[in-house]
Length: 241
Length: 241
DNA sequence: CGATGGGTTGACATACTTCAACATCAGTGG
DNA sequence: CCACTGATGTTGAAGTATGTCAACCCATCG
Image 1: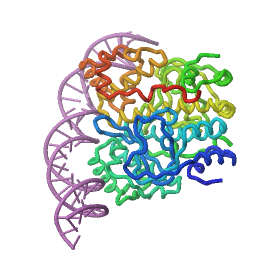
Image 2: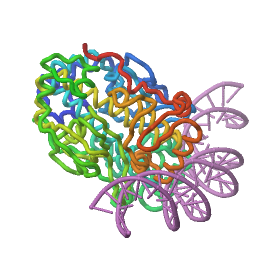
Image 3: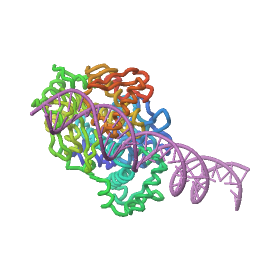
Image 4: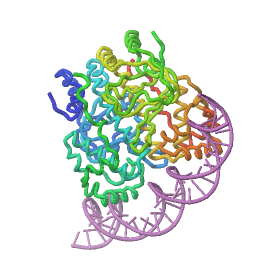
């Protein structure tokens, strides 16, 4: 069967049969391309399709009326885009491609049908959603209770761990297309302060973020500094055999 | 069939058959009581059961090594406790009863079995999880991009909306057992500042929180002040007929 | 009756924001 | 080939929201 990033991700959690993989595969409909910066889902939109990200980076964010925004999460290949929008029948957030991206569209009706006929698939998706939620929760802790430097270090460590899981870099060194404005909106800080904090971490010999690449100069030190615990990202063996 | 807070909640989303309601009902195992303040799930615990909250308030929170904590969410009757812990096989957070609480225990194996045989139930639970995630996301926006007063007002508005949905008060006036310390840990502020902000909102004629009761003196003003948009809490008709 | 938990208030400290200026670079049109 | 523009990054100075520390009040409960 196919070996898409998504099926690989789900398979680590629920051992999917050939039939189930085939159903998963049949969900992948139209392939579409979106260019960086142009939103592909808008806050408040209804009757939205979901997507699976094939290549590139995206981010989900919420806009406030005064123009501020909060980036909730970044998505990398293998991640769902807008799954929640489908289930809640309305999108409570926007999705913006950070780079040019390639996605496959999944129709809401197909997805719900698949759940009805392939319950283990529903469980697998529920797991994936839980994992996403765990990341949002950790993000909330970042913003609520860590100072700017810890926040930044923790965020970059998590990003490295996620990327290395899908083979897009080492956890201690990876390519990263985010601007300081993205970081600011994700971490709840001003872009100016992001710059200062990055310098601070660089001068402390922990992380360097330059020219689209993040490199941990001292991975252990960074982990200790920000109490990074990747438990919530780890697989602990399949839930369903 | 039974009319538990949970089945009522799920039924608004997925029209459940009598059979499905019976399966849902059969999940309710042992009824247990926990006293206020003594954690019922600990961060890092494995092989955890999940619970459904029947009465009282609880909160899920994450502890940092330096003693700070971030409250992620408050749970009220009808909400799941520790659902994510079951799916991820490990608890990434603690759960503390805010008041004395009554819960029913659900074994992980029973829940997964039920999903396998009752796919619509799995979809319903996936929906409930999405709704919870939407609340966490809104919470993240609070902490990341709203100032203390807006944050507080938004939080109290959301709480009122949630409580009125399950019949535990009016959206503009409800009983609330939280202390200022709970509010501080939820909103990422110090308890002292919580006190000042509450005074500020009271003197502005928006909300009064005193003696365990929240009263909106001017609901419209509070909504406008903090751009409260309850979209993410609303039902838009059942997803599955 | 003292201890404890919750709430209230003031004085002071500080982490972060805002504003402003400037550097660098890629793209674009003349 | 150059001038111009827009996006991104960098740095300093000044302002402000929030945190910290400390004192005190009140109710409850052993």
